[in-house]
Image (cartoon, rainbow, N blue to C red; front, side):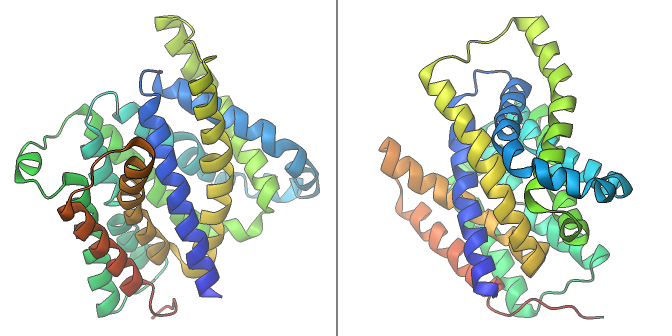
Length: 297
């Protein structure tokens, strides 16, 4: 059962790596414009599948409105919005390193709020995956590491880290109460309502962007269907099965998959140091997920 959950989380990391590549490719678009069209496309796609569940579970959604609202704001509305916004002010290296810290914060919060525990071997695995991700991102270069600074974009990225950590905890506590597709319809509706006025502010300041280029249309369709719908369903299912601590470690595979995608799709060079870092990440994930999830009182 847990192997199936781990496979779903593995696929989630693959899809999220495409989110990073597509987000970088459209970095010339305003961040909340990207976020808005992403959730708009996702809403249009999921509405026919989830509307019946929305009506059937309307009482549940109303009685649990606080949980639905915070799930929508953290995981669906602002996590990716903050990532796109942070890329306007800081380097993709800084963003990737801070995103790799999500498992650390998630593990700590899971210990506090969910009483989840990792054994010694799994702590070593989590540490290895973080160290390996850091090494892949920085290419093992001390020049890159020394050049890292802290700026406005990093503060925004910290907000993204906090948003996803909170979302993962809330998924474990509340998501089993809601139907899969109906919950996405409701959360995406909230995201559209919140992001539209923010996108309008961007358009009033800089004009409506030209999103009707083939590359941008393809990128937005990918963002709207894969990270916003498919990956979210896979992530939620994985977190429900194994808990946020173990699920979050799979996020350290992101720089590995981004590196592989850049190599095969863009012809970028992969150094030996990055390859070794990728092996360390994979080893850490295997160690962390080796034992069945459990709780200790």
